[in-house]
Length: 107
Length: 119
Image (cartoon, rainbow over all chains, first blue to last red):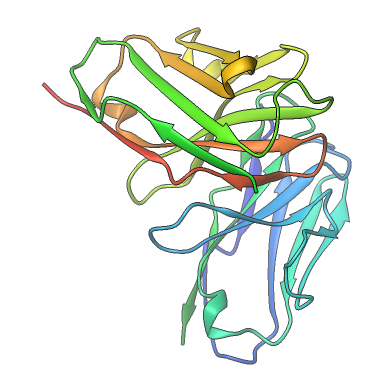
């Protein structure tokens, strides 16, 4: 299976910060990576597909980048409503595999 | 408007078979490139992809569940199904169905069905 290693596990941030989180694949997955946001008690929400394509309605402060094995999700100008757990997912291989998540918490 | 909703038994005993239904609207699973997937999440844990079924009836499973999974669909009634045999307490989780269209990501999710395995 393709292992998706997310880092860091958690981050303490302030409103207005620029936040960068990473996802590393154990093998080349091309650009077949999504990023999801999950707030407490809610279903996951798609932010980024195909590594760098922002989904409809997602604020432009969310940016995805990367290819091959290394991927990054950046939130510029962090907002309080962005407090959540963020997951990457590779769908290049079956089984599709999620990272373990990066939790954003207030400093 | 795309919606999905999972339904299941809520609680079942170890060794029983879990049957989940995903009832959806706003799209057809016969449309080229369309897919419904099942993903679960144990309390306080991360997301685990379980299975996909595509518009052309291609099916993919997570081998970590060791052939316990069966995914199917009823295109006419806009439903997808997941069966998991030989349920264990470790399978206690919230089970989600989600729609994927080609490479556009799982853009639509159900609210999740809570399943507890307990004797």
